[in-house]
Image (cartoon, rainbow, N blue to C red):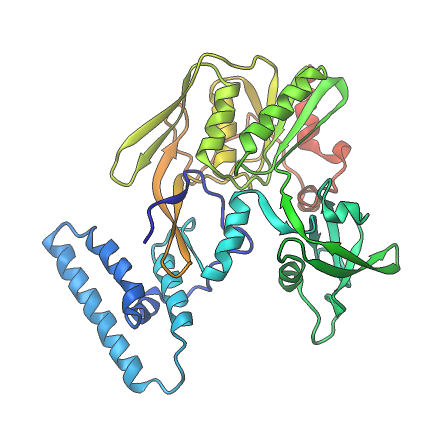
Length: 419
């Protein structure tokens, strides 16, 4: 097992592409692991290192005996063919599932590259976001990345992808591609071509686009009326802090009199990115506390330099991890008004550890608290001003189609900063 890789003290929920294996009995799955001695060795070593009492040693011996017994019975009586690769994946996923921690998950080898793309805010593709929401046939484009191949090909928000390389997309036919298959086919090797059939206002055309390395836009901003800058932070993955700081400085150069940070639907990201942004914004003092599995506590601090400008933060139930602690820090220092909904309440940090076969496990290795030492586990942060959106409004907000005048949370933030 490799040393810690991608130390993510504020790790997001598993990316959509890195889905946990369906819930199964972890003990049965773990038993399969013993069939692959080389694969299981690192896990036995890992659990062995945690044995500290005679009782635990006895339990471990019984556990290993059970694994051996089940493996022997499978080898002796199972009638079907055994795919050891699938057994290893299922066993590993089952062991992590057995931890009972919603933030820990297994990443199969074939999904690891996608995981890496997610945490580095980049991928190889054409630069579009697609959805099947409210679409009868095909997949609708909900966002086009500026200066991407899709942008150059004049694809637009609202266009439908109805076929990929001639294969229909979600048209009800037997061989039609679904959302996941479409994503997989559109992505590929950098510099290669993909031909899409696009429907624009009912008119179809074939477009050939060359795949390229796309940097996900994780921070965007715009100037609202009354010289208020709306800064949307989509995640706290790689480069998020510098992108946010650059947006703030550009907004101030253009005369921004106040800042509204939008971290709704923000799934979290790297601790280092959060610290850098909070240090830029806040005066001298603690930013948050992190405690590892051995009980060792670390406190990250801000220096004396800070930004003095009226601020507000928009948060909702789907604001996780770094997004919650970003809002909590600004709230506890009294420099920003938090508006929206109660956040989720994530209180553990994770790290991804790559295994010898190219797969990885992402497990919780510690917990954290706010600058004032408050745990958010199971409760999240309470906004200073509670403003809820209806389900349809939330859906429209998620897909970037909610008009600002219909966004009650945003309108309340504007009211707070202008009065």
